[in-house]
Image (cartoon, rainbow, N blue to C red; front, side):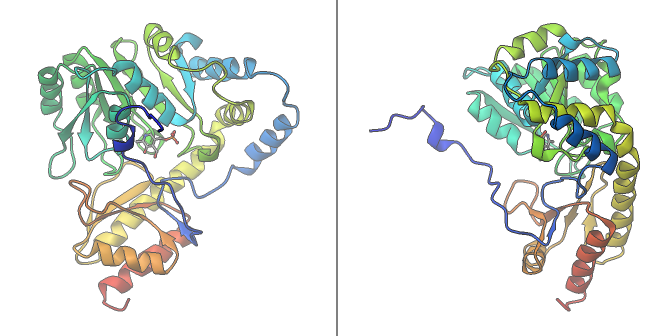
Length: 354
Ligand SMILES: Cc1ncc(COP(=O)(O)O)c(C=O)c1O
């Protein structure tokens, strides 16, 4: 008889099974590989990696570099296997009992609920408004009423694309005193960050990733910025040497050369604006304002539209019956020609010529 941990079999799973898509627009990745100059430098550095040593220096170098960039110290930075691991560890550190409550918006990144469950904490979702904006006062009230250990917002929010104005982020930081995580996975497409608030609010924590704007989803690298005490406490939840030297070396190079990404981030934003305008011209579609590299669309026949995408090998994200996301599809911005291809599909669909 196998005796698994209590509650394990009830845990929801995040399905990452993929098909060989012709056009893949379902995971908010960057549809371009590394910029050529970055790739050249990465390959050259990888050829000199000390494979026989544990990755100590490489971790410190990247943490140091990130800290310096934000005028902070290495002890303010924690690196993780994607920001996923950082978020999961934060939930673990502020969870642990029936009375540990973690408050987050809904709809938002679906993993928050899963991590709360895995951390033996109670997840308390706060419903976004009809237009998917966050009512900061309601959020603060929920944090107080639930006596939360951790409050989380995603800015800009996945999967709605909505940005939360910095004044609202600061309002929340001012009015709660539990740990407050701002997940900034898509910040580079928004340009607004809570970074400037970090020194003012010691309970504030930022999570960032190399997976989206920096086209490094394969390497699984993310980082957290917070006060030294929080970093030191969360570090206790990690194994030693938890990031491998290959990912660290690539991320270090990417961070050094991040200026190379500016034109393509601008291109993604321009594509998002272009596509939003194009879809708005098609009757029957709601396009939610987005500050990210994806668009959330609503259509009464979203299920059939998704079938249409599937039959053409185009992968977009459908949310099935997820609360508040009925009839919604999330489409990551691809290259211009890929975007033209999915637009064509919805134009034909709307004209009934599918
Ligand atoms: C809002 C949000 N946070 C965090 C992540 C995790 O990204 P990663 O683990 O690749 O850094 C994602 C990925 O889709 C996301 O959408």
